[in-house]
Image 1 (cartoon, helix red, strand yellow):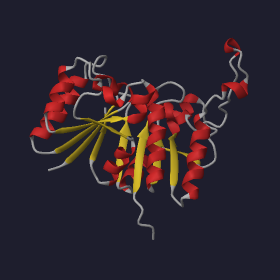
Image 2 (cartoon, rainbow over the protein chains, first blue to last red):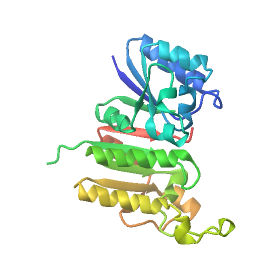
Image 3 (spheres, rainbow over the protein chains, first blue to last red):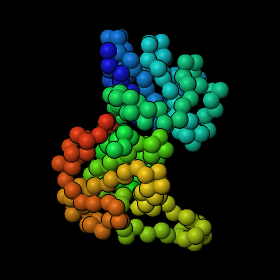
Length: 108
Length: 137
């Protein structure tokens, strides 16, 4: 089993390629790998409770850990209480932790 | 011998244009804060991040002088990270892609940053515990 850590900066609502990116994350998780995603920049927009995104909802129903960067949330005035269930708020330090742990860290 | 871990970053975005640049610098700061040595290979537009002739400016349209505007310069952010690394006895290495520098005419970089080639990225990555490549897409 490998550990994958995706940094998701691209926004589901404006970048078509996020479909493939999320599908890859789900596929890796289904194969038994440990998969985490940190939403940063406009990537956090789809984390809002009211955001209509089948992709994000599907991801949250899979065994993928989804985190949202606190700085990116604050920049966009997205309150932590207004996030979809199963999304945890995190600092960007998790990326460094993943790199130091030897995870495969991929920027999207 | 230090048992501190080392992370290499490759980055290609120019200063003043994209939010990725801010996120990139946040990652560098977080790495140093965690106690890791940092190596940076800056290519394409990122070769201008350490350009020594960057200048702060006022904004006459908004009626602000240079001090009021407090325009952030990436060369100063790099210098601040160099200082932070030194205070923690960590390595902070920065190489700009030479061809990218020449293309943009940004040869004068701040002290502590140097000129190299993609071979340095391989050298950095080989000597590091992990590498993060941040592409423009």
